[in-house]
Image (cartoon, rainbow, N blue to C red; front, side):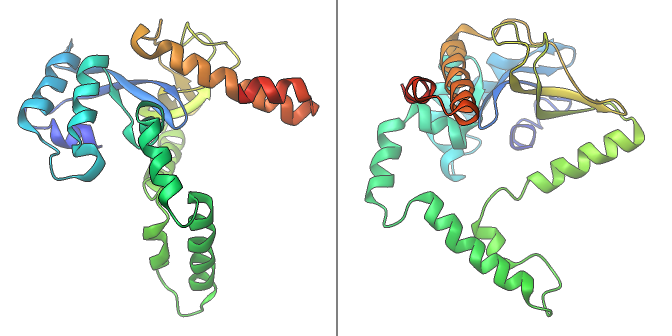
Length: 225
């Protein structure tokens, strides 16, 4: 939605292709007018500084990183990989961890929700984040009910969509949503610019699941490595 909004003028029919994992994905192809416009669209954002006043997404480093990668990182979580030292400093300087902050916020959310006078979304939800998921949920439900073939970025079983990851892996790609559920659109080979990092994160996730299921100390250590 953000990319479409800021690229609406030059590319009113913009279509996105994404690849990666949940909380670590990239818009690697931008299509308009029947052609790929990824490079020029990223260049447009850099030149126009279209998001200069919009917090983290207006960060020049984010735009220039996109230019270098040839893809637009889904920045909120990608920053943890590309600016790890900065994020660690901020976390170390905080009075609470993010988990502790969320636990406190959710107590407020539950308290407001339990109030019989509450007739709308609890105000505390605005501090929680993740508000956009409701729209994605309803878009998917409508697409399934009406067999609409709507294109939405969701997590799905890879199958043969992404060559660089196992068929059984969960990947986050553009899927066509209809009566049969989410059908991933083919990606092919993941761009080399970030392929290794995504594969490393998927290896960690796979080993972490194995450790949880088997209680294997070795798998736990390998996941942490």
